Image 1: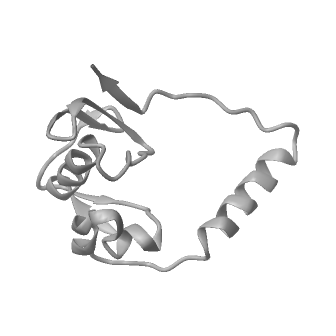
Image 2: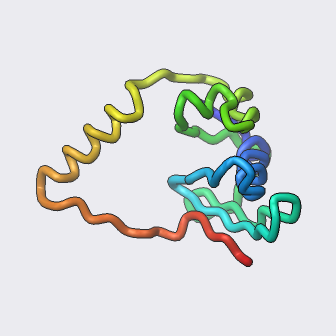
Length: 117
């Protein structure tokens, strides 16, 4: 789906509250502080190393559950140009199988989501 930078900032702000879990991000990073569910702040959002632009449209991939506004992430429902793909578990299975074809899968922590205290 396509979302505006403003929509993405709203979603990541909701995520920063930690009331409904932390949204993961690929192709970018964000930092937030969270002292309590009522005392939190989204600090920084970068996409491909550049600051998020409120008026720009970004391509976003998420689960059907979140796309339908699940876990109170209702902003996802503003998404345009939705495309339905195979089930998430099938996509993950295909990805892991392809990555493991040439050897063991190596996992790393990339620091895409940073919580400041």
